[in-house]
Image 1 (cartoon, rainbow over the protein chains, first blue to last red):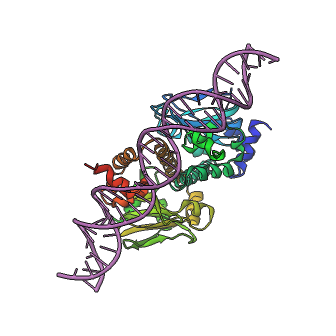
Image 2: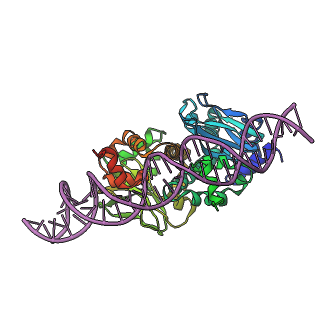
Image 3: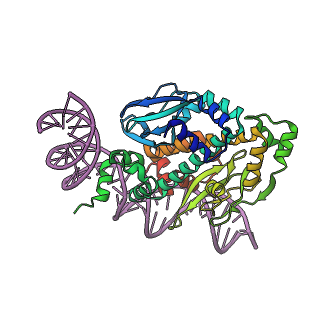
Length: 192
Length: 192
DNA sequence: GTGGTTACGTGACCTACATCACATTTGAGG
DNA sequence: CCTCAAATGTGATGTAGGTCACGTAACCAC
């Protein structure tokens, strides 16, 4: 399936756009192809786009002063990624986005999104819906963080994102769970 | 200032509504008054409203099987609160919302919000903006959780929400930070 | 007032997870 | 098919923060 079709059916699940509306909407996206390991956003960049994943897998992550990595989000096909804090507030990136596998994405600038939201009411509805989802997911993850130990969170992750689990190395899953890779390893290889 | 004025100036910071539009918008809200300690949403309730705080302070929180409390959010005047997961997905509440102090709120049902978002484009814009803010804040908190120790997070909280810090007892702040009240106490009373 | 609930302080001890160190396996690229 | 880097396993040891226990102080409600 083409990038355009993938985006179209993704949007259609939430709002109805006429073909003309969708074509107009789509005309604001720019295709991008990236290789495994390649950076899409780097800390201190100016961020002006968000990225819709057509194929492959991205991660968005923060690197702290000790060079420890924390993964905010994985992004599989039909998911969106960016440094939303930087994007919305026109500040420099504090997080990185890069490719876990080769990936194709569709880029949409912040300005174009805002323009489209103004011009097409249903587009604004779509983006509101999407953020609502993201907000609820983030709150759930926060609660799980406070409430559950690593083992539970690991299994929860496995159930929630089996398709990610199958692609992503365990050290990255550890970085998503906020735990050391050693501890994660010991979880499913109980010593002795 | 009246509830209506407070809501009006809160909205006006983000979008412009005509007076007629705002009056119509406002006509969908129902006033509510609650006493300190009173529950607004209880786990297993059906949730059909979200709440705009006019005065006082609310908390939304989860109680786990060991009866330990985790605070998702405080809500001061002009902030919004609900069990958004339950509200958006029409499921039963898994979190509670109650009053830390006497409080006045404006209630808006989910159906009315959706109706208003459809009818008035700018209203949809406002709610998209609001959730964007919430999403970014939740992601920041998540990162801080993974990256920083309790002491740092406590000070961060203090800087971010000084007005909450002055109202709310420390055991609730501990529940927000996801830490035991004993540990929090030892932080600023370093034992000799 | 007084009694009782809620907030807060602090010591002793426990535990989940981090860190460091090193060995082993895997897999992608030449 | 080889090589080298990345991913993974595992032991020893350290530590932030939890839990339990108990005591004091502050604040209602009556």
